[in-house]
Length: 295
Image 1 (tube, one colour):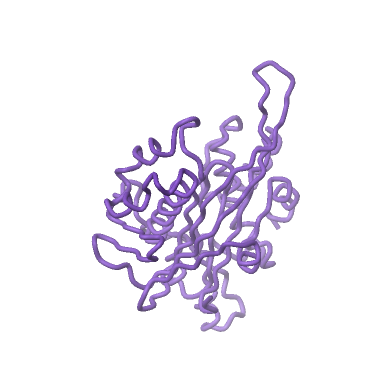
Image 2 (cartoon, rainbow, N blue to C red):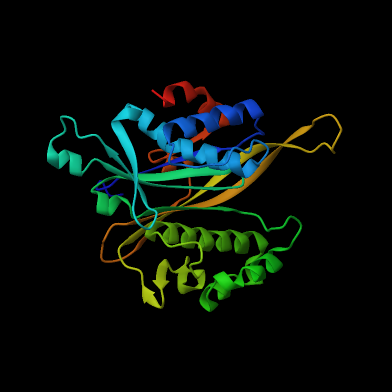
């Protein structure tokens, strides 16, 4: 892995339900520390909680770097790409130029994440994170029907890679990998939500990527999985609460433009592959550091 613009990823597992008090504490931190981030106050809305937790990740990352909140600002490009600029203070000009932190945040279902890298501003903003819950949706639908419902996001070549002969598990995992790759790339280049996903083609077994029929050159795609244990209340309304631990699988991709001649696919299959660049935390761990995030 390149030492130039090293990549780090932070992941929060929303491993249990949250309380109104916890929502309030997290929402206040984002409101106080990132006033330009406007998240409507809506405690019962689980999606609002996901947004709040995800936006806390840059605060956590800067806290780990021991950089006080007053010493950095969150900047954004015209196409919505974020980078963090530290105050120069006594930093030499060359070091300041290479101190920019580009990042992208994303979430899906029970997993929130942030991918970041440090270097020159024009380079570090070209980063994106894709997260795809490995599950056919809505609940109960078959993998074949789920794949067909997403056909508009796939090319004909990609559809041939998802044949029923693979079996549901392999086909679903491959589908989610393709979607996470597209999501990460679209985020990395700062495209708006209406971008046509079928303009992109990822042949995962062949490790090739194309856009509008042309090879995508210079990209690094890091592909990894996340397995979460999530406590779900399965009791019917009005009955005593009963939590069951549910396992959820996610396919994740970090895309970053390195400017090399070819694009590369890096498959991280084991926990050891991830330990140097992916950090997992849960709700309780994030709540524990709240007092330190505003310092």
